[in-house]
Length: 113
Length: 115
Image (cartoon, rainbow over all chains, first blue to last red; front, side, top):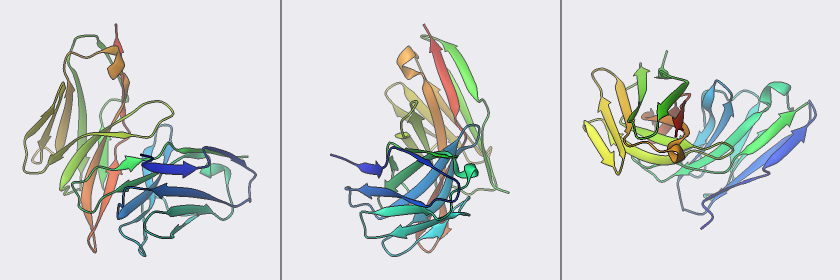
């Protein structure tokens, strides 16, 4: 029962490098989310996808792109990493309907130097 | 602008006492409010959900209240134990259009239960 799986768990990038954070869920959920978590700032929504084929911006989308590859997978891409993107990134998913709980992955700790 | 505030960054409490955490919001019309627990190095884990037409919800030692007039939720842990030490996050579920919902989190309150 894997739930939400994120890869990688840790990553160090140099400023200007690009990378894609992968997220997959095996619960047949329609909605998927990407958050970043910084000390003192809490969890902030970057992008979300209400269903396969749709994506919407959250609170802090600048510098990121997303792809909802299929129902299971939702990736987050940093095209040109900046030190301000040093953070812990969490992917989450939930079933359709506002009453449903979100299930989170274990997080990706990203450092941009 | 929309805000979710969890009043205390940190709360220390003696084992056996009741811990009460507060979540206030402004400029939201949430359909639901959720509480999560987060342990260091882990993702948040869902604890409880309360609907806008519910005043109170209980689950074992946990109790949540939701007052849409005051725009506030209270989260109680009774008979607290050191194992309850964690960061607790409130989250608002609000309709964002086109059949989708956003889940927006407060910054969390770090609870430490002292033996």
